[in-house]
Length: 461
Ligand SMILES: [Zn+2]
Image (cartoon, rainbow, N blue to C red; front, side, top):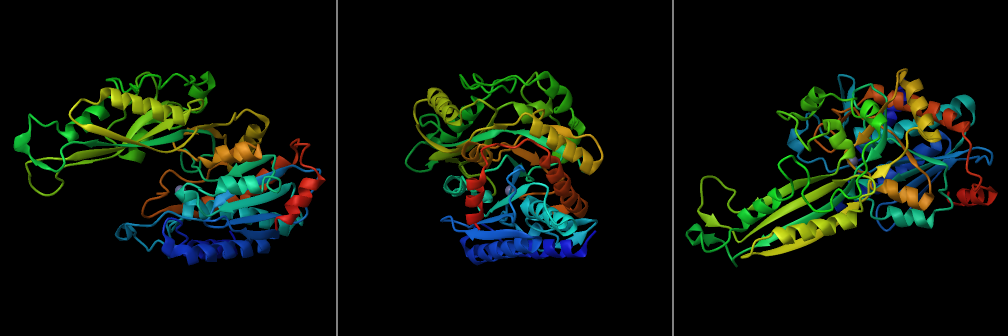
């Protein structure tokens, strides 16, 4: 344990770098300066790049070696808004250590995890004088608001950011202390609809002659699934691939139903028939209602027939499903099921495809070996139910796959009050980075990273 590492973490967590709130613009820029200084102190070249939104911070090895592979380590310095403040045991930007965990907004997502990588590089440079492979840090400030400027930044800096492989620590471990390689994430597609009825809220005495928008919204929601929780939108499953047999043994049995019940507080598990809970989360697409509203919400009763009703939906998608097509199928389905007497307005929202990386590929094996050596136990493979849309941009622009070496514990409360990161995970992350870079050093690397690219890469800083 090194006190200066903890000191760095506390300093980083004290900066309220909330990308969603414009009142924190100064904090965002203070955070980029803190990172630039930290990367330089770690022994890397560092620079801050404007993007039109929150800046990107780049760090890279000082002496790029043409004969070694290049790893790009991606992370983000922005955090989610901390509200509601009253639910925090200690203030979100005054880090506090309790029972071996540091509590602060951003502790897990993603400051603790990205800082562990930086400190791993720092320690290697201090002890060995050189890194076993080339390293580029790409640390953005808009991940929590959907990375609106990152894709174009990647396109503009494609040559400078070229890498053989990308490492990201922004996912979780299936259980505390269990090394986990996440090899797939679901995609997402959002849709909102409004059922418009009469021009104003009516006395419910009009009921019977006027179609109630809230009842229609409920009918439309109910039409999304059949009785066995299969999504009932025609064509929804057309592109869905079956899971591989090895996944049932390796990936879908790592978390038991009772663990999942404990983690979520749900009374019981249920879902699409024919699949285990973990397979449903990782490898099956879903339709979820995220928000619903209509009529009187206050105390007591009010005999009202509401003028409209709204519903917010997202679909979690799996590889080969095209998000834009899914949204169109959903829109067609809702229109086909909408009764007469109301007007249906549909707004298609943001979307991103699913991500899948073969964990048995050469780099997948490097990731598994790294985790095994770091934790001294077998790596669990996992498919994550959530999404990191930027993975597709990294793949399509930079042409490299991403290894998801997550260090978050299931009870880390990311995005919620009392976010925390076990210090053990923080120090493990520092060790993991050192082992990872050594493992990568022996990998064959892409021949197309030549001297002229390295000249470019030098220019970026
Ligand atoms: Zn987050």
